[in-house]
Image (tube, rainbow, N blue to C red; front, side):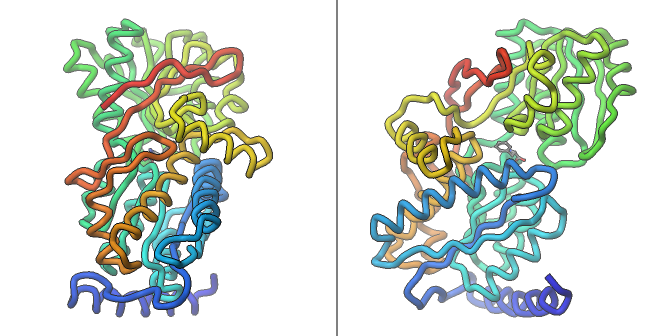
Length: 384
Ligand code: PHE
């Protein structure tokens, strides 16, 4: 986008924000024949698979909804844009959605850091935002316009800690975390607290940043501390390299983490052999056998050339269904009414039952995945 457009978008949204501050929430929108919804996602760049999967899920839901007649007699119009996994872009995009497109709600993002960027813009304008899969608690603390349809990291951190302590029977672990993302740094803390509370010990802590490629120095320090497992709260690109380099250094202990591991690229980057004895928690597995999950998996495969959906796809899909459900119950596609309806959401989608709680989060079951022979394997479901 050129600087003029950026400036215009910014000025316009500043006045939207000023109006919203006067009246509480943006009063009117979508007077036309469609219900405009904005979706910002990382369709390219470092976390491209997050945005691509999430977008495909959202798109499928919107197409299905429209085919079934839309809601309130109107069709959905999905306006979507790529933030290229780049800091700052999400703010620009969401300001444009609000000022130029007049969207009644915003869907996004996967990565907590980017949801934390755009959340305040939606909040200031009184436009409800639904994050499909950002798990850092601060995302919805931005204000009463920001919702999510997934569990949060205090739950996920506890789950990883319990799995490490009780199932893997680990006592002395290393924590090697991504300090450049709100997600990685938060999950580091939640995991460590829960692991210690469960009687375990964190014997060494090391840190890295997004886009790092060489982890041997930190891994050597970790090896020297002789832990019986390594927790890596981070995203798949770096995680893949870390697992690979750890094995190259002869570190064979279990390595585990959270939903940020989830991407087919993880296997390509780390290699099937290195991923032996690795585990992560996430939101969804395509082999879950609820009727809604089965229906979603079949529809997704049919729509996207046989591709098997992942957690981001399932949650992207559910974020759109939750929005449609709220608009239907609100009886109007108006931001303030949608916001009110969202806060009483209780519906079943591809990823399970979404009940929005008082913090605008959606406590729900998690799944534990391992990698065997170069394939992700579902181990079990854990209820909240
Ligand atoms: N929960 C991660 C975050 O908050 C994003 C993520 C969700 C990654 C689902 C993979 C799968 O940043």
